[in-house]
Length: 181
Figure 1: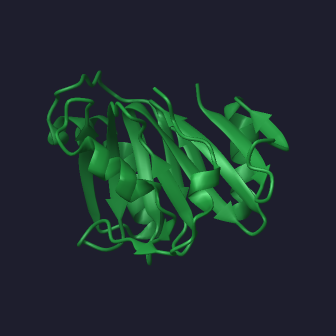
Figure 2: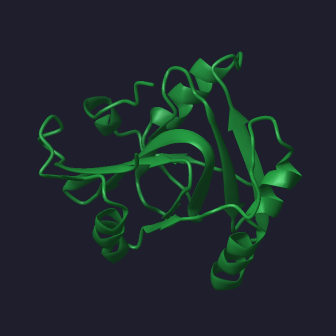
């Protein structure tokens, strides 16, 4: 179940707000420029299906976002607990970073925890199957796939080169929750 927890930066153990209701989560995130939507497939997608099948199942929503925001590239990333580089990938994404473009992820399957550092607050957004999150360019954040990742996500990019991170050097991410799956 998707979940939003909001923390003051100086109190990482005590959320000031928490919700598992999609509409409430979207209501909190929208004024911050964070897109949060739920999508449904026009056909069933299973683990191991091709990238083309995953994209085809959500083509109408993908086309809508491309038209709205001018995204230039779409791909599918899939990571499982038996991936030999899972620990290195997890550590890389756990460091606070920004991007010069939006970071848009739709969870076809599985889950991931996005933590957004906005001013004096951290917004932890647990995304699960059916959830799309759009983090605006230059927003400090980090991502946790958990110690045993199991997710498939469609990614949309403004930059055809794909994912490029600018690490902030901040230690803030070490003080906040991790995804235990």
